Length: 153
Image (tube, rainbow, N blue to C red):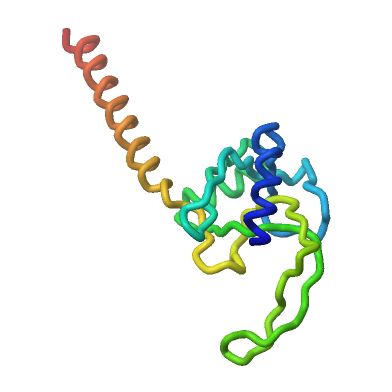
């Protein structure tokens, strides 16, 4: 419920083109523009799962993220916020930190190890790579045809 409430408030940032995030989780309560790696373009609920679309930006941190993704590195997404936590006993009997109602979402960061199970980038990355490969193949074919016409008449 907390994330539903906060994601609804975050819609304002998305619509104002201010939904920015950083590479890794800094301890700051503000998004440092020098470290921005991506912009959140959309978010929606798919049942109990919050999903979204991020655009990796052409910034130094964005370029690092882009190169890691291009190298096949699986990157996660994690919310950054402020608020209190309370220790409670979890289902397995272990004590866990439970985020309280005073939580305020700051942003979503790209991280190496998200705390939420399954919160990884990449559902559409392979499709985009395949599309780009197809376009590159078409460009190479066009170049071959042009070279054939120019040099072999």
